[in-house]
Image 1 (tube, rainbow, N blue to C red):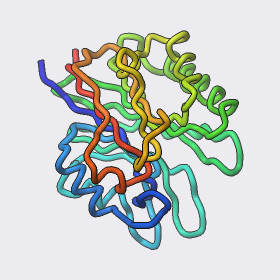
Image 2 (cartoon, one colour):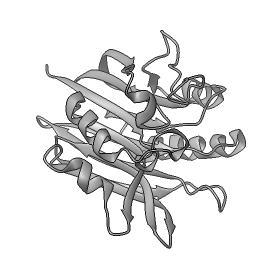
Image 3 (cartoon, rainbow, N blue to C red):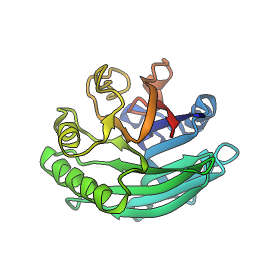
Image 4 (cartoon, rainbow, N blue to C red):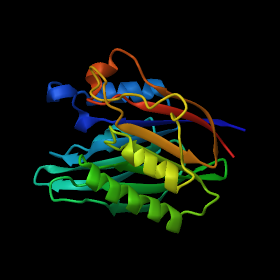
Length: 235
């Protein structure tokens, strides 16, 4: 049974806290060092002034990648992305926006590891709890309707769920498990002085080995979020 490493990281469009420094090269160096099998990215820039962050980050590191644009504007667009060492099949990029200011999505792909399929769902939820509850309700209905119950599944991303209310809904209404439930949700925001648990990894039908909040000093300025890691055996 092989071990696989998954990483979720809101890269803040490549900028550190307060947008002081543009760190996309350092983010790529970090991903290379971490050497995860799959990376879930939020706030990744699909195009701005002719530059594609997903293409840049994946080059020579990840042969397979998918991008789901959510926020489109005159200068370009950004959204969620999945980088993978295993082949990916796009299942959909779904608009779950609840207002005109926060353009949010759910990116769904299937990765195949040694003939074993894993459903990968990457999301970024709204700032207001009322909107987050509506978004997670839609996501859970989508999972129940469109993903076979026995499928290996990971739901990861920036949930903006600092009060833990959305997580409770997931616990109560699905068989998705929180990687960090037993040890407490890691505080991942702001990166330079983490005080809020915004980022999450949920899973089902996989064997969890461990989860970790990354804690290297350079992460304090790489983005405004700290990445999370989870390691699994795939059944």
